Length: 198
Ligand code: HEC
Ligand code: HEC
Image 1 (tube, rainbow, N blue to C red):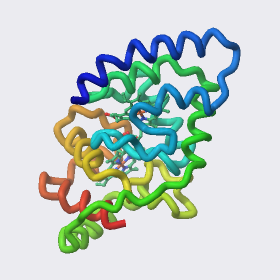
Image 2: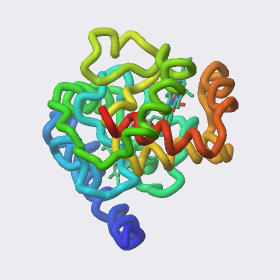
Image 3: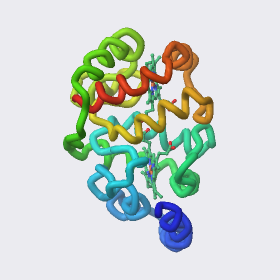
Image 4: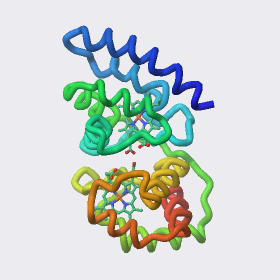
């Protein structure tokens, strides 16, 4: 079903971005048009499981992700349109979008989780991941290296973790690569349950 969306999206985007790039400036609310079909205007997403929640993600992390897609360091394995869109964004567009989505409130996804698995996941998180991944409402969330994982959509986290583990998503940081290397397949489930329990 998503494939249909993906095939239609480039045409829509081409029109949208061509008209946008031809005008000198493009205000944040306008450029959000290029993101709405997947992330929705509120950044919570339109309900596609593989689309991460970007509302309330610190602007600095949104910018880093967009530049990583733009310069090809991060690939879009399931949704090429995401990367195609990022490649067309100007520095100004990226700053505007990061500010826009970063300022939006992050609602709870209210997902089901297994409390026993979550308790184990918390321990793994504290030991290996907490230094760089803080909850979205933590006062220091902007200063750590990684984006918030607590309250992120479970399906997306599972996909991202499995992609790191299998090597299809490149690890951009040696220290994270080392920590991810210490995980096994079972840890994915405990971590995903822990982040969903937030
Ligand atoms: C066709 C659907 C689609 C469109 C359009 C789209 N995205 Fe995405 N976005 C995704 C998917 C899927 C991912 C996860 C991709 C991956 O890394 O594999 C993603 C990832 C991201 C991330 C990384 C979040 C994280 O947790 O690391 C950011 C930031 C983002 N998108 C912002 C945007 C912005 C801003 C726009 C508009 C200019 C946009 N996206 C347009 C589907 C889309
Ligand atoms: C040294 C800091 C650091 C450590 C430690 C670290 N990470 Fe990360 N993590 C990052 C950075 C930076 C990114 C964003 C860059 C990227 O996509 O690779 C990231 C991205 C991620 C993502 C993708 C998030 C998204 O929204 O797309 C997941 C999932 C993740 N980390 C899980 C973990 C887990 C689980 C651990 C512990 C086993 C861990 N990380 C340890 C820095 C770290």
